[in-house]
Image 1 (cartoon, rainbow over the protein chains, first blue to last red):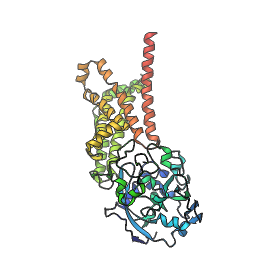
Image 2 (cartoon, rainbow over the protein chains, first blue to last red):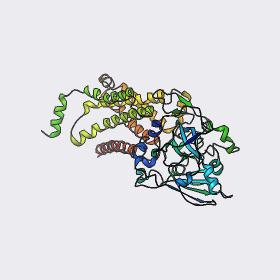
Image 3 (cartoon, rainbow over the protein chains, first blue to last red):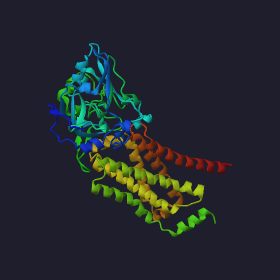
Image 4 (cartoon, chains in turn cyan, purple):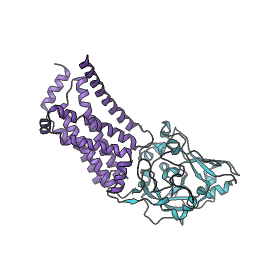
Length: 267
Length: 206
């Protein structure tokens, strides 16, 4: 497949990105199995062309948009972001994408809308993990509207200039770098604007452990493990553990979104 | 002669020590994977999980020795010490990988984890009860303690196995099959002991 045309984005970290091999061979995508090596093994069965996203709810121009249509006239930026998993490991990933706000502006968000709800493809014939009831399929995620409109929040269609690998959420996925990785929903087929906080998969599975916000926060532990530090993947057996940063190091840009909120309560 | 007697007769001629050699082969394999860089993208977790699971497997094998003898007559009793010690060896390695390579001696985080995280608390408990078992897994200890007291102490194996299986179940997200199978297996092996002990008690009072 052809390489993507991208321009450098201004929000990139200068940290050294993980290799494409690391990024594509170590991740969670329970639709393709529970092990972090399962997605790389099983995701090849996924059909990603044709692909469309249904956009509905409180928008001016609802409809089912083909992926080509959605990407027409869009400039893809390279965004090298830190990626912090709730399991206390992290990577640095050079995403190629565009601000979610560009898409939302295009479809016209109505004034009463407060949240954006996302859904992953439900296709058990191609996604073997969906044949068992590990989670309540399809995978669902959501953002508050101001989080969704934030310039750091992107829809990514590639990594390292390559079209998004299937195991990483092809053809199009969300990336919200200041939240735990599971918020960055993959293989999106449905986006809905609502005035009520949407159901989100991990929150439904275990509300005590996974909050709606799930901002990276070293002060709020996961009930079963500490979030104070993380292992940066890629450094081998003796890679040094690093301290986890508030909002995954994006506090300067996003802390204002949560002014006055008790982040221990709204974890 | 029954089949089990034949098997037992053949086993009697075999020494127990080669089991230590075979039991250490998985470690050799892991060491080879480390050298060749084939432990995957996250070698720390892979190593930590693999040695932990091998330890649990040896622990389950230890608990299978008595039921095997009672149900089939085949006695692997002379291999049980090796199975138990191998289990302890791999569990100790699992703990060292966690302390050294994973959490990297961040003692405040380690202390908080042991106190606050039930799965780590239970894991540490499992390791702690294995210590006296490993220390007394030799003929001298059996003689000094007396077979009855030694046998009583080594019932702590049940605690270790239960702790290990629960520890595994508690650390995963959602409800995957594999840890559930280990938990069910250990529960069944312990339930057998409970049943036998209940029957013995009933027979005594009858």
